[in-house]
Each structure stands twice: as C-alpha cells, then as structure tokens.
Image 1 (cartoon, rainbow, N blue to C red):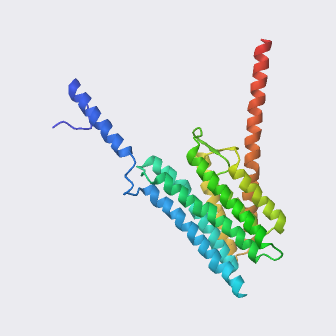
Image 2: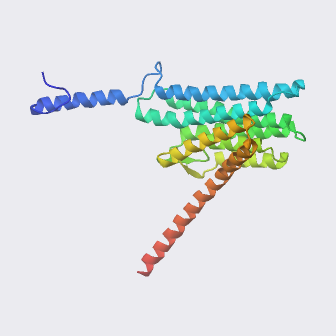
Image 3: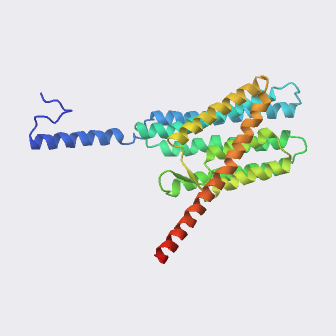
Amino acid sequence: MTDPETLVGLGEEEETSLRRRRWARDRELRAPRSPQHLSTADFLTLGNAVCGFLAIYSITTGILMPHLTGESNAPVKHSAATAVTLLLIGSMCDLFDGLVARKLRSSALGAELDNLADLISFGIAPAYFVAVWGIVSPGSDQRLSALIALTVLLAVVLRLARFSAVKMRPGIFQGMPCPMGAMTVIAIVLLDPPFVPGLLMIFGVAYLMVSRIEYPKPQGLLATATLAWIVFSIGCLAAWAAGLPGGDTLMHIGAVAQITLAAMAPLLVIRRKVGQKVGDVRAKRAESRG
C-alpha cells in the first residue's frame, strides 16, 4: 500500500490525485467549524466575557453596595484590585484568542463572539467603573460621571462596529484598541484624580478609541511586550491588594505608565506619519532637481 504522505514512486495521475486529496484535507482542516461547534479560541473568548462579568460583580458587591449601605469595613481596595485583575486576565484572553484562531481551526462564531466579549469586558465594565467612581468619590457629580461613562460605552460600541465593517490593511487598527482604552480608563480611576480633570482625561480616551489614528496590532515582539506588561500590572495590583510594602507605589507606577503609554502611542503614530510625508516631499524635490 502506498504511503499517502509521500509522492515517491507514484505515477503522474496518482500523484495529481493524491495532491488534490491532500489539498482538500488541508482546506477542511483550515475551514471554520460550524456554528454548532466551538473552537479552542472561542473558549478563550468566552473566558474574556466571564472576566468582564465577574469584574462588574466585584465592583458592585465590594464597592457600590457597601457605599450605599454605609459599611465602613468593606474591602474596597481588594475588590477594586480583583476587578482590575479580572479585566487584565480578560485582556490576555483577548490577546491569545486571535493567535490561537490563526494557528488552529476557528469557528464561524469566532468574530461575533469576540465582539460581544469585548463589549462586556472593555465597554460595559470600564463604563460601570467610571459610573461607580462618580457615586462613591467625594465631591463628584453622579449625573456627569454617568454621562462620561455612557460616552466610554458608546465609543467602544462604535469602535467594535467599525472594526467589523471597515477593512483595514493587515497589521493595523483604526483607533485605540478597546483593551488599551479600557485599561487606561481604569488606570485614571485608580489614581483618583480631581473629578473634572479625571473625566476630561476619560473623555479623551473615548475620543481616541473612535479616532482614525492607526495603531499597530500586537504581533511578534509587540505581543510579547503586551503580555509582559499585563503580567507586570497584575503583580502590581496583587501587591497593592495584599497591602505589601510599596504596594500603593507600585499601583501608582503601573497606572501612570498605562496612561503615559496611551498618551504616547498616538503621538508616535502621528510623528511617523509626518516623517513619512516629509520624506516623500523631499524625495519629490530631489527627483525634480535631478
């Protein structure tokens, strides 16, 4: 019997037939599964959605309800750290589900599940975080914070809809990615800045998510750096929640670094665009002189 994985010793017709069967098998393996079957990547996506829901639950039970009932001994710090850690884990799931889908077979539900999970973890959860901050923070305005929270949610909805409808060139996102936007919003809340400046910063993040600024997709070294940053952030939050020496400092360092990264990214992109245009103008001038 001829080994199906080798073409040695086969005639031309047999070789052609074997190659066709092999190509058909490869197409079948790469083809998305039916909507009735979930792939490995889909389970990571569902994990992202679960993390988003649990983060909302942690904020509600650990921060909002104790504030409304007047409990003074509630573990607010631990609940906040738990919620943010869950969203960071959700970011890891969101980072890996695309990588796994490209390596293994995806399902027909993959793209839709990803958008819905992102809406929960990076839209509803950070918007809820802002709304609760406006309720529990001294000197805040609940209506104004609810309005800005709604702005964050709508920005994520529009960002996800545009991602599905607009085809960008490979390796590029249009607008700040939702995970980065969500973690930047939460970093601002964790720093607990003066209320109005904090809301203005959050509004700026919402604007960046719906802007047309092009951001590179985290692949290769960028994906590794993103994962390392998430792990570092989780470590800082764990130290902060556990009350370890320097935990507050680590939390502030992590939050400031996240905000700085979010602020620097569009500036670097704009600088690169300007540099490219200047280079094109100089090249055209050089050609005209030549």
